[in-house]
Image (cartoon, each protein chain N blue to C red):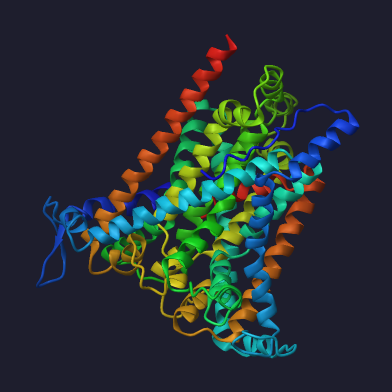
Amino acid sequence: MVAVCLVPIVFMVVRSFGRVNAVTLDVEISGTIDAYRTLFSPTYRPVFMRSLALAGLTVVLCVMVGLPAALAMSRLGPRARTWALVAVMMPSFVSFSVRIFAWQGVLATGGPVESLTGLQLLYRPPAVLIGMMTAYVPLFILPAYGALSRVPREALEAASDLYAPPRRQLLTVTLPLALPGIVTGAVLVAVLSIGEFIVPAVLGGGKVLLLGNILAERGAGRDQPLGGAITVTMLVTFVLAAAIVGVVRRRTGHHHARSGS
Amino acid sequence: MTGQTPGQAAPGHAQGPRRRRDMERVRRTPAAAVLAVLVVVLYAPLLFMVLSSVNSNPDSTTWQGFTFSWYRAAFDDQALRDAVVVSVQVALGAATLAVVTGTAAAIAARHSRVMQRLNLALATARVGTPEIILATGLGALLPTIGVGFGRVPMLVAHTAYLSAYVTLIVGARAAGSATVIEESALDLGATPWRVIRDVILPDLLPAIASAGLLALAFSFDDVALSLALRGADDTTVPLYIFSAVQRRVTPSIHAIGAMIIVIGVVVFAGASLVNRAITGQVAGGGTAARQERP
């Protein structure tokens, strides 16, 4: 089962150093980096930047919405917490494509959002962002909430005894201690949203072209070297993301160790 | 980041009045308001879909009375019925295979710390790699090695991806389980198979159940792998919805969506109850298990 996952990816990495023969349409592996040149050429650069921007904005939105929500959850009583957690996670049990499709109805012309606010959002970037945020924010909240609820009460009481105002407690005690969970959540959202292609297809009306769409539509067929180059680029992004999580975890670990001694 | 959420971080004093005062303060913070709005935003579109599915107005712009006709249309749709069959076949098969292989990997790795780490690292890497990469890779690889597309490649791909989730969930449980009992059983003359059957598996059962349910839901929901590997007549339910949505939305799709929403909620509630019954926790394994879901 590991091989079934590994072999195709290695195959695509090899393909990324190839070129499509214009006559036979076969992929010739010649060690060229043409595919990468194409990916970063003016033709595809907008797609690349758009994918990065969408992933970045999704992360920012998820943190903006998810962090206060997770904080509020971590301050609830034990019973209320469980209910809040269930309420936030339950939609994730409903099929992803159905959840995204449901937004199409709400945002459509003549739908509730348009009749209430007059905003026509469907098939525009805001619709894609709303879909991305609502789909991924539970995945941010789960690790962030986990970390926030594990911040030791004693640390906050100590800060309180030393007359730190609530805001200062939040910024200097709670958030730094919960940072690994927050970063894990943010990286999880970033990794998932950079490969996304369903949300843009359904809520962006197919007009918002992303790396994931190119991969899904052409990566396996006539544009294998380009597909390979996208695969490699995404993999590099993920390794970097994993490295960030690792560094933050280790730093916070050191921090704990030092403050403990 | 948004407003700095100047809330009182509730200290953990257990005295009644003080605690209640803290709770009051919690409820009025901007952070709590964000949480409340988020919950509304998460459920509003689902609720709207359910309402649209019983609204006689096919555009669902205004309410024009109750009807079940969209459901009748959905049930009469032969293409959709075929899609349900394909989805159920692939999901049941992939979830079963993923549970067997994933659990076997977790059990096999549990005695050696190195194997356990390697196993978890490989599973994490598989879960962390987006499906679209695996889907494209398989889609490009299979024709070059002379394998055609169809339900079997779909099944294998789903299994390969899902067994990583199973390994992670079951492996986490296996790592924390008591090996003392296992050793006692072996000392008392139990065969290794008997130990696996009577000691290890019952201990892992809650994790296996959560993982199996997750795999089932995940496979049923998958678009990327199925889209890349399907044969001509292997449309699954999400693929049906996906292609229908891109062409033209008919009210019967609202009915399908509403049914999937209800099934999702029922499965979630059922999983939480089963989990509670087995482990005494509320919504623990199922919820935690869900976190890696793209």
